Length: 108
Image 1: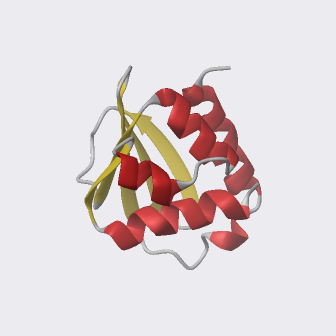
Image 2: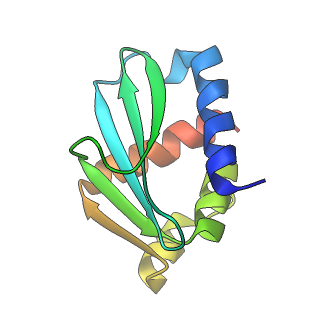
Image 3: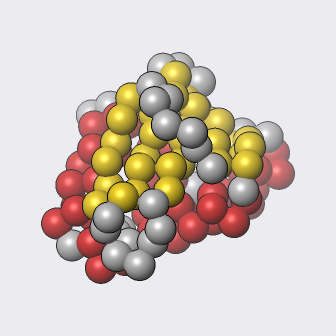
């Protein structure tokens, strides 16, 4: 399974039970994958929308490999170590990067 498919499955899981995102403002998270380019995760009106490319202005961008993004989606990536070793780069609001990790972890 590709990391993009993993992300779409997670979005379906979140949308089936949006309890952990219902109070979130409309937000755009961008993930720049080293191998395949940008994907945006858009929280809007209590739903998650995944879009390939970068059609929206993002508030935070995470740059990492597909392997590490897959680990993040599964809750297996230590983001602090990844950030400190340079395998995860964050542009924008660091607090939102942590919020994205929290949302992902809530659905594991």
